[in-house]
Length: 458
Image (tube, rainbow, N blue to C red; front, side):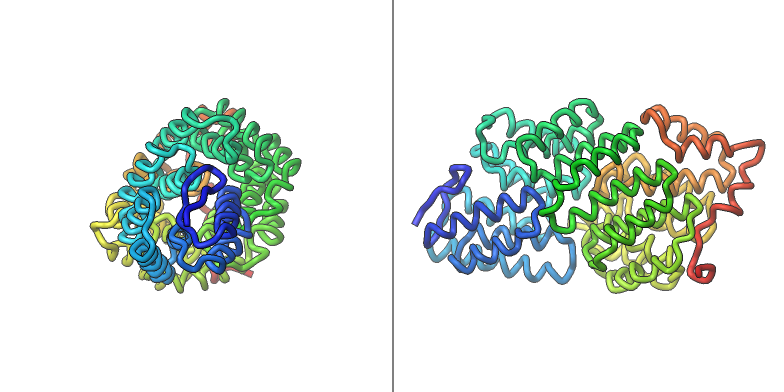
């Protein structure tokens, strides 16, 4: 039978209940809700052959960027293809199957192209809009994110059931492309329209981060913490933003407390959680904070991911975790694994263009070869966006670069980049403090701000 979902799209289902479960799945996905897998499970229990349900499962598996879930994604693809053969599919559903096939083959750009073709014909399809947004985010395609969601919003009305979530996507894309004032305004509108829009909340926090308004950012997150009560582990990322504000405000103890009570209270192995944790510990150590044995549990997870090769962004953070814990042998293996990706895949191309050089530079930094680290990161700096993530997430690489330049006594280069950093933000303690420390010689910084490795920890 055919039925219509909440956004008016025709679905091939066996019973009306399946559509209700699909609508719930989409809303949870848009809101980063912890109930997303439960809603999807209820859908597939009600209709075990639901093509859209299997496509959803396949994409959700791929977005987790773990090698062991590739099989689950391909299995979901096979079930969707089987449903298509057995009971037919709409043109839209067939395109979802094609997009999932491309994504399973590592061709994310091709998958995005198909999702955008869906949106050309059906701009109200918020599931396609969010999937395109998510994949572009993982590819560092900020301009594409903005163009996609703005094209959708130009065609849908304010009565769209997911308008708040779409506005949240636009707010984030605006922030990532430097339109901070519009991003903040639209992010706040998104929250008004959809109080569960954690992505819109997070977009406003990004504006606060990128414009140097740490106090305002911390106050905003604390005042709106209920917007993440329903969230999955995305809540940990929002508290990571709060920790960054605490660190910028010189509240190092507060940042570390958030690490223990919010960011790593649950010892998950999701790459996004490891990225939150590793990048925060790296920032803390660069800031002179002794983090004790906190690196060890991250490094244990990273050791199991040495040959994962799913996402360059994830691998760079696994590398930081290994180096932070002083596990040089495993770090060497991970650096070597950067060259082992399929060169025909999107992530293989990212590894070749920026991943290998960035990994070598980060390893050089932790080995004390600061000039080499600075040179390597400067080389890839213009294209580092290709690893994906946000400006705020990739800023850990910028901080490592700046710290390496100071320790290598690259005075003029460091001053130039730090003044550029201050010009972009109304205030930035990281840059201001390092500029003030650059006296006649920068060597004094080397002895007091080296990372604390495993042998030196408590």
